[in-house]
Image (cartoon, rainbow, N blue to C red; front, side, top):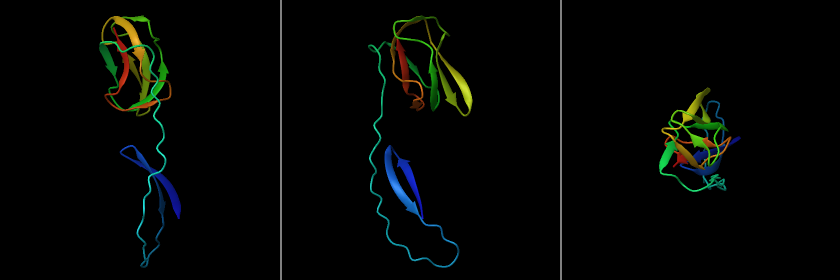
Amino acid sequence: MKNYKITVNGTEYDVAVEEVTGGAVASAPVKAAPAKKAPVKKAVSGTQGGIKVTAPMPGKILSVKASVGQSVKKGDVIMLLEAMKMENEIVAPEDGTVASIDTSEGASVEAGSVLATLN
């Protein structure tokens, strides 16, 4: 028997899998009890701005280059996102001031997640 932890739609399940090597195996019904759901930490700094900077793809935040209150120009790097073994620069879509950083270094993000906001 091998034990695995599987996440389906945000709910974690502990499952046991039996390896079968030929022949018929009698199986018992499997009860999948939800495991304790890990809390999702959202690091929010400051208030929300009107311009949202979103993740273009799922990945992991490698580093946050800007801070709340910092002035940025269009194209300035706000953070680095690692996706498919590549580093992607997340840049300011227009000139403004960073109003909030809505993620943190090491966080996993989904496509479309708000990473930061600008005023």
